[in-house]
Image (cartoon, rainbow, N blue to C red):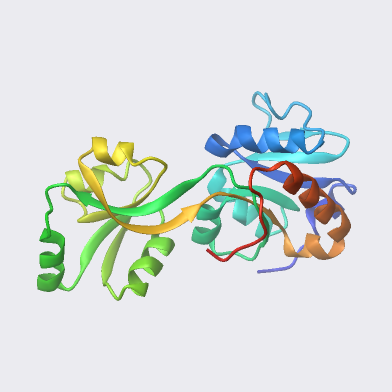
Length: 231
C-alpha cells in the first residue's frame, strides 16, 4: 500500500468522514448529532455523495467500500460494521465499538439436512459453502479443521442451498427470521458484529488530537460504546 497524505491535509484542514449507506446510516447520523457534531444536510442528503459543514466533510459510501477509503487515506475517520472490516482485512485503527447495528454471522443449512452434511463431508472430504464473506468463512472453517469450497455470491444467500448450489451458507442475521422462512436452520455461530468508529493510521498520527477528541465525543453518547476488541 502506497502511503498518501491524510484526507484532512488534502481538504484544507477539515476532517473527512465516511458514513455507510443502508442499515447503519440513521444511527450513525443520530450518534454524531447527539455528540454535538454539525451534520448539516447529512440526514437528508438527496443525491449528494459529499455533505460539507464548517467542521467536516461527510462521504456517504457503500458499506463494503468504507475500509478501502479509510486504509488508503480517502477519509480520516469512518463508521463501519465489524463485518466489513474483518472481510476487508485492511490497515485501519479501530477506536470504538459503537454498540449499534448488532447482528451475527451464522452457519445455516436446510432444515431437512438432518446430518446429511456430516455424511457428505466424510464421503467427499469437502463441503460447499455460499457466502458474501469468503475471508470470514474460510477463517471460520479453517479454525475447525473443515475443508470447504467457498462460493461467493452477491444476492440472497438463502437461495444457494435451496437450488442445490451449496450445502451450507454463512450469512448475517439479526433475528434468524429470514433463514427460518427459507427453511434453513442455524447450526453454528461465527461471530458477532456491531458498528465501529475507525481511523486512518496516518490521520491518527497527524490529526491525533482532533480524531481523539471526536472519538471521545462519540463515545460519550453511543450506546454501550467500548474500546477496540479483536473479535
